[in-house]
Image 1: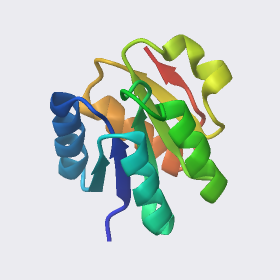
Image 2: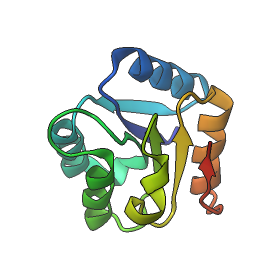
Image 3: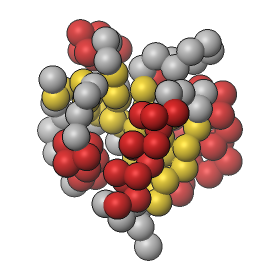
Image 4: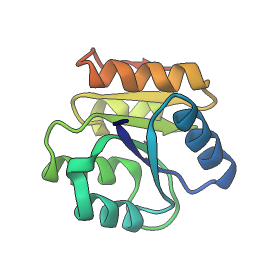
Length: 128
């Protein structure tokens, strides 16, 4: 059974890239386009989610930092991959432990490598 990745992204083109990249890498993907949708998914079955991939700026409501903190209240060791175009400098103070950050644009290889490293217990690192 494949690991399930929850992807939180509000930009349709980026969401499609994430979904396709993860599916091609063998992951099951559940998508949310807002913080509220993400929390609904997390609340309905966090045990089924192996990794959270969260855009930092996703419009009104909760941002990616807040979604990750809420997810960690439910499952303290859930790996988190933050994706951002402009918030990388805040990762040190806003990011949770056992997380990594990918600066947009990034490749499918970088995305999959970041997820695999976190699942394997690898060190967190920002990718610029």
